[in-house]
Amino acid sequence: MTRPGSLLYRAELVGARVLLPVLGSLGFFKFPRTVRLESTANCNADCVTCTRQVMTRKKGVMDFALYKKVVDECASYKVSSIHLHNFGEPFIDKGIFDKIRYARDKGIDTRLFSNISLLDREKAVELVESGLTRIKVSIDGDSKETFNVIRKGLDFDRVVENINTLIEVRKELGSKTPEIGLVFVETERNSHEREGFLKRWKGRVDSIDISSYHNWGGSLHEGERGDKRALPCLRVWQTFTVLWNGEVSICCMDYDGKVILGNVKKESVYDIFHGEKLRRIRRRHLKGDFAKPKICLRCEARR
Image (cartoon, rainbow, N blue to C red; front, top):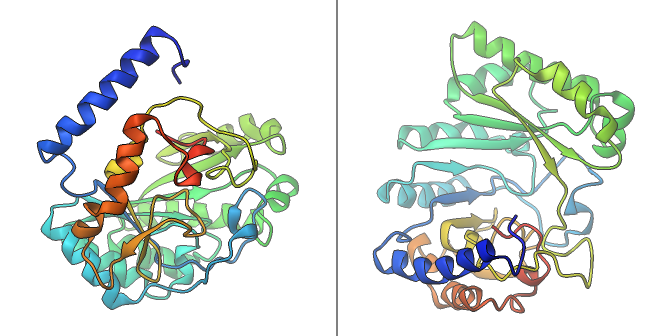
């Protein structure tokens, strides 16, 4: 991260404020590059690092007809991949495999973020055969004692078994997909298990991501400002987050759907992406004004 006031930061700031509008005028941001479809907002865990503990919006599963509507539009704009997750466990959605196959048949790669606790061998076979491109698994520990405290409601041994099962099934079926990635969110609770985690999984999965905890748009550190730089966040130019009920939130940090840009039940992805609500937010970001919406001001994850 560049330091505010440094020459590199100033060059980065000027470059972003000049380049983003130019790229926009050239049609570079005609359609979102990353489309996130919340297949479900339901979850079987109560993780201490998750904002679900303070999430108040209604939870449900995305209707297949609505899903098809969005995917069809994505296909027409040649979107290369979609994410079938947001704030929920995808495998709770009984139609998740049909959703993966539908996107695959449209030529779109699919990605999932999961706790994998519900993936038995039968589902692992169906997952590999569905054509899922990539799955990332959250596993914030290398022991039952640590993991079960962080990932409340889940069992470490079961999760490890399910990851191993998916690795085995993929090999048995002679498939290179889905790519399997593990995510370890490092905190004071589990940092002592980092090396053991890496030793256990290195060479067995396709990628390992050791990440740091952030404040989810300021919701975890009320009153503090997160990223103090004035750089505009590329998420509002490149990403599109559809909640399970069709509402479109400003980005994946908006866990409670406080900043709603529209609803794909009534509007197209294109129209919402180019709508005045989002255009106004982009203009503020270019000026370094993150006061509105409030979630942007305190966010530690601007990029």
